[in-house]
Amino acid sequence: MSTETHERATTTQDRGPRHDAIIVFDGVCALCNGWVRFLLRHDRQQRYRFAAMQGGQGRALLSAHGLDPDDPMSFLLIEGGQAWTDTDAIARVLVGLGGVWRLAAILRWLPRALRDPLYRLIARNRYRLFGRYEHCLLPTPEQRARFLD
Image (cartoon, rainbow, N blue to C red; front, side, top):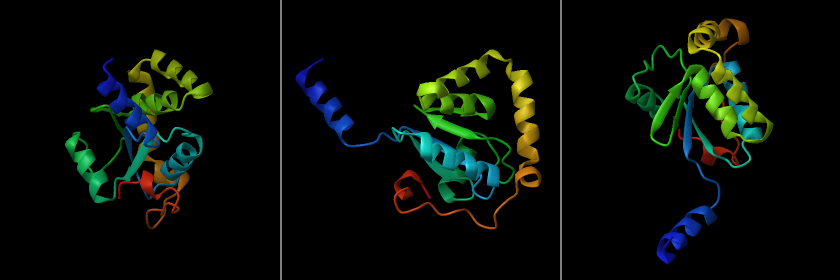
């Protein structure tokens, strides 16, 4: 590695937390908000940033990846220029947390044809099963930098 490349890499690493992945979530869904709170608590490296699908950037990201922002039935993870949905996205996020959460990679051993229909069943019924908020929850001032909208 050249000195210039090493300096550039070191400078990038020293700037603080890396936000190299974006999670688009349903900002009024109680289950989805619980998931985001879980990630805020366990994402020690602060890899993940969040965009509510009700916001402008969340809607744009859903549309850009072929998902209907007016009928969102999918969780969207964008990382390294690629997009994942449903159980692939959930497993990838959990593995990305490191530590014991890496065991979530076991989910990938189950055929997608089995895991995704269960995910979609929960997603279709998420408001009835878990509730919903009238408005998207606001992040704390400390969390604000992690949210796009």
